[in-house]
Image (cartoon, rainbow, N blue to C red):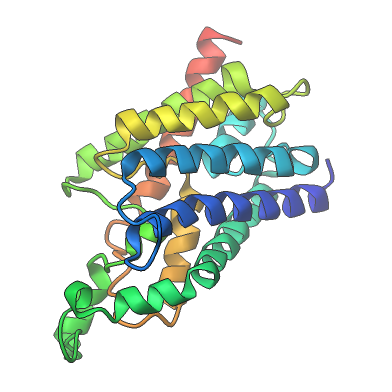
Length: 264
């Protein structure tokens, strides 16, 4: 695979992943959506199908890593780091494009949701004093969950551990069941297996933090949330943002180490 194929494949694949995954979160969250209140099952299966679709679209070009934790794990497994920056760049750009497309697809729903007094409060909605603005930038806004993850209980050790454990499960499944014949990405059957594993992780381990298990999936859309001109959007919760980046990378490295010791 050439560097251009990797970059294009990861950009397209990760954009599709976030468009469909973030899309199901928007569908369930936004007040004027027909799917509002569909619940956690819809989100878990929506993300699983998003993974499957993205893998099948981007697999022929880049091997469909779509996740820096997968890229790191394969680099550790094979001892080859040459293309890691290219994968990372495509994944982050794709995640940002996908999150922007979610905003485009649900533009009217975002506007209606974020101007509804039952959701954002009465006249003035957000205090504009310097102290209040600083607090809003740190706190999670009312639609941040459409773009990125956040904990139900804010405990750094637990939140980090949850992301590490979930990612270990995902990467072990990818390394043992999901790889194509060349071993450099996900195969056709592997895409389906990985999608079902993502559903399982969401249902079993997603409750505490929202199961980012993918640094690009969380960081790219969080940047987009911070940049979009959404009324009364609140903060992007940057104080938490490092956990869904660092946790999955640690989990991917641990899974690769387990694989090299136990399976290689």
